[in-house]
Length: 201
Image 1 (tube, one colour):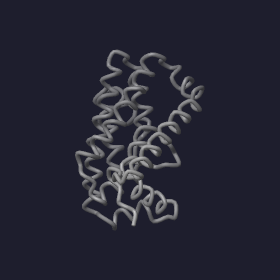
Image 2 (image 1 turned 180 degrees about the vertical axis):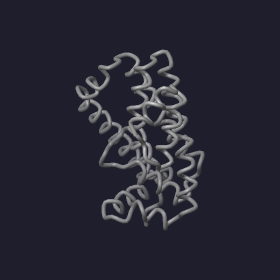
Image 3 (image 1 turned 90 degrees about the horizontal axis):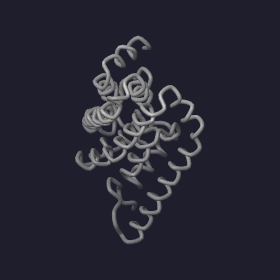
Image 4 (image 1 turned 60 degrees about the vertical axis):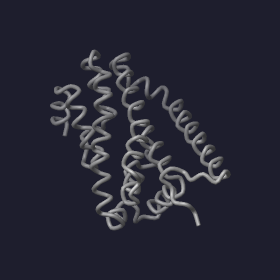
């Protein structure tokens, strides 16, 4: 895996694009797209923002493939991701909050909230492709462009900065979550359906 990662890094932005595509398709990822964007930015700061943009683009492409797979697999394939009690709870969240769950997990890597589960729910419930891609673009471009900027500016100190500011990032993620939750409650109070959500009976 380390050898493959080194090869992809040597390809620069193209390698990042390929890795992001593979990861978002649900295939094994040797190192994670976030780490690869930072590594590529450190290796060549001049192409850092291009790496970030291509990482986001690759993620959208891979997610589209994953969407088509889960859409065609339907409930049978969705059961693979939601068979556990925890998975069923995430599935219920998606049916209530819709694409907000996809946006949050695509924007901020939160281990306890797996992006793939919510993405699988979006495919299995046939959420409109354009709406899903718009939500993913709004999340992935800021995420990977931010990682690229961080790598280009701080170089090898990027990981140190991330460790030092981990709680700031957690608070920011919580703030975004609360804001979106508040907007959902306001929409529900006014009788407006949440995008991608299934009305609660």
